[in-house]
Length: 588
Image (cartoon, rainbow, N blue to C red; front, top):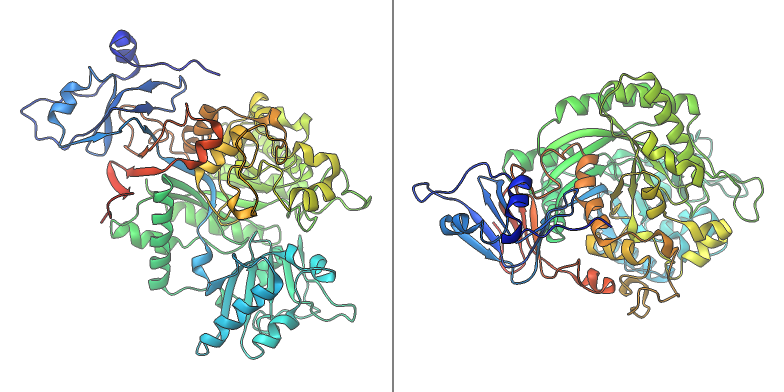
């Protein structure tokens, strides 16, 4: 672990060299300075520097250093923020998240873990809203079904009994499956004879009829009417969304098409920005599908040109290299347990993926690949290598996300090829009622090596942290920080089990050798994530000249017991020096 630097009066020379103040506050100036003191100021710089105070003026950081050196700023400050022994740190940046959230849908099933309860929720909503022409919902768990429904997904007959005359579509919580009634299939023009998209599946009954679900890329075939929002509702939903993100300490996000193929609501975010109501930096992506490469590349390039501002920019393209472990559609180098011919699947040939990487990088757009299995990860790394050899040297910052299983021999390639490892640390534990039943059952001993962190970092990868919300139902970044540090259960509430008090408690502990330090995890959520969204020159660290994107939290997470990190509360969040969240006061 790097040695931290403490900026006090005793290291004035060092402080001066690290943080050369752009200007001194004078009594003659009219000040809008906000001064932070009386706590730990963690800068997230390469040196892991810790300071005593910080000053903000005109939306920028103008001083970071010792309390003594900050006196001139404190004297002129319009506001002095007492950290009260807490911590000031850079705002969090989510490196892979979705903006199509449960609030976009008519209702959700996230609280329903039993089939009967889910059906009751569906029936209640449909009966109480008889005037709607169609219905869309989110959040069912495939794992709550049994028999053929566990394998194929829930049947359409269950929905037809509740809603026989109007389209009804429900998306799974992981975004890789959908449950449709007969009218939704009809609206989407999907029949038993419909040719499925590469990497997708339309399950059928033994007699050749539609079963009731769609999987992976087949979700792209759902009628757009089932996903459309009015402009007014989109703005309201996005306002709720960014309020939630700000309350967790997020000041920036890297957004991707939701539930597989639902586009980012660019116009909604643009409206908020035009109204000076956007309280997040929103960098986002288009999507490139293997069956519509040229059309999708053109669309992504247009988005890249249209959205190119500090707060709202299209910098990336999402590519699905495989599916998910739950449905055994993750693409593996070795077959699934007990299924010697099943390696999962990919919708991509190596040649096509190579060409897409080249086309994106030539347009200065990042390729950002969904890869769960080690086979998919290798496919993406091969494409990154091809692009590196065939595109002029540049700053492309290609990325692979999820990385559930990564072959040891591929880990050094991340650093060698300048490919970012965008991880979801929330998942790095033996999740109750899931790891043993689903992951270990599918992977065998490979499940013991899931979600590598330290081995990737040690091999030269830049680790970026992300939630993949709403797949991760609670995007609280302190849960991710704790899980990355402990590789153990950080929040027992969703699972109905007891909290742990010792990070080495063996019950849910997964690969403790993959633990990262607290500082590593903070950097994954700040400076590394800022780099991943091409904003590291603007945000991600607390340094003079950078945007004042920062948060005040109630405890020093560098010093608390690791199993208490997830209890941390964000007290205030600032974007460009403007307070966008205050736990004790409503922010206009």
